[in-house]
Structures are given as structure tokens and as C-alpha cells.
Image 1 (cartoon, helix red, strand yellow):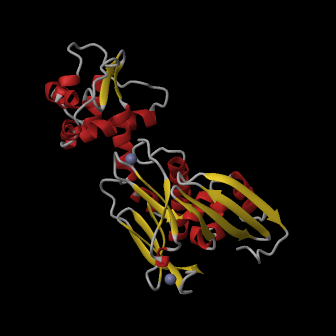
Image 2 (cartoon, helix red, strand yellow; image 1 turned 135 degrees about the vertical axis):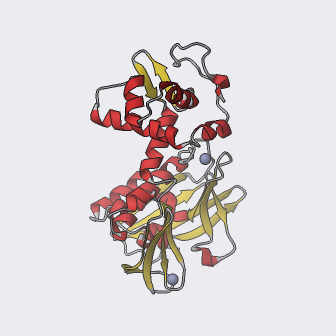
Image 3 (spheres, protein in one colour; image 1 turned 90 degrees about the horizontal axis):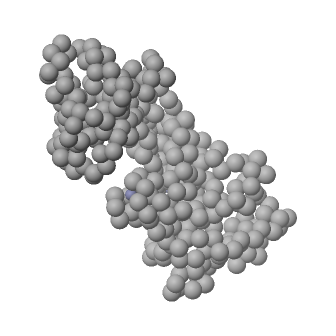
Length: 309
Ligand SMILES: [Zn+2]
Ligand SMILES: [Zn+2]
């Protein structure tokens, strides 16, 4: 697997060839090597200032007496997860990511919570909202299984927490993800994505126009009511703030922009829509283009929203 490794015992800092993912994961298929990665993290926790760990320190931490055997396992990690430097060895970016994912329980966590009823209801059928968490996915639905919210949360975040807190965390993660995607970056793999809006046949999908994006590199998908595009707009954010209801502190499925936005199609090719929604005492109108950008937006305070469209 070590085609990309440097040929001498020198530093690895300039070995910059891409590594085959299958080779990289094969290197982790051994409990001693996973323990080596964990030994790095434990050493850094105990010695925050240390940037490198000596060979002998690592070997003792893992508990292998035979230094030849230990060196063999360390070499399997080198190049991808571990690199050699002046004072010993250190984790690479990939090594840190693997350790973080192990701590987060991404590979091993099986936490389950709920279902638990919320003090909130479905706007379509009025039944109570229920949240549950299974195998890394938080899901909020109503008694009739209308989907209200759905997001991935690493299992470690679900340990010793309530579903209410987990919904808050998932909301924060979802906001960050949608903000990146709106800016054209996949939040899962950081490849470029092109967000768009599209019409859908079924009113059942929560609106006739949806915000959507698909990453061509990792196949992650985003799909939400078109009113979502207003969530990231500074004027809408400050409007919610002024009304004492910051977006981050609310259930998404209850937000007017997600739930009660009226949509008028202005043009079909390219698609352009006019959104109208009343937030508190303020009527908001916005035009959204095919690339899911808010082309213009105006707020008129003091109206009760009647007469819009
Ligand atoms: Zn429902
Ligand atoms: Zn991606």
C-alpha cells in the first residue's frame, strides 16, 4: 500500500501523492493500528503542547514489547494516517479525521432514543409531532407519518442527552449544511454543488416548488420547501430576531418561511418564483431564481398579510 511513501526514513511532509481509498481503509483493518491512532490522541490530551510523539512512547502506550512488530504496524499507517517528522510521528489530517469519527461513534454507535411526543404539531394534519433517533438519524414525523424534519447526528452526540436537545443540535447542523450548499459547497465532501429550485407535481410534498441540490461526487442530496432559501437571508434572519424568535431557537417545521410561504411561478424556463410570507406583522416578498438565489426581497411592516396574492 505504500506506493506514495517516501523512500527513505526522512520526513513525510512532502509526500503528496493521492492514496487509493481501498488501500487506506485496508491499513485500518487491524486492532493494533486503531490503538496506535488512539494512542496519538491520548498523548495529545495529556500533552497539549506536543506536536509529535516519540516511537518508544507510542509503543509503550499500545503495549507491544517487540519493537519490530510495532514498527511494522506503524509503517502500515504511515503515508496516510501518520507521518514522520523531526521529533517522532504525528497524525495527518486523515488520521485526525478517523479518530474524530471513532470518538463520535460514526462507525460503532448504536444509540436509540424515542419516539417522544413534542409540544408541536403537524401543520398539515394537526397531530402531534414525534421525534426518534436511530442509528445516526434523527427524524421528526407526525402521527400520520408526514415528514417534518430529518437529519444525521453522530451517535456520540446522542449519549446522555434528550431528544429535545438533539433536535436543537440537528437544527444547528442542518443550518450550517444548508448555508454551505446555498454557497455551492457540499457539506459532506466539500465538492462543488449547484443548488436549484424545481417544481414538483404533488402538493403533498409540502409545496409545489422545492429547493434541491445533489452532490455529484458523494451523492448527498438536499431537498426542502422553497421557503428555505429565505432562512439564510440577512433581512429575514433579523426579522425573526427582532420578533424575539431567532431562527436557531425554533422548530424548523413551525417556521412561516418553511411552512406558510405562498408560491407564484413567474417564469418556467428558467424557473423563477415569487414567494410571499407573513412573519409576525411583516409581509415579506421575494423573487428566487433557478439557482436558488434570492434576487430581490422586500419587507413591509405593519400589514397583516391579507391581500398577498
Ligand atoms: Zn401530519
Ligand atoms: Zn459531496
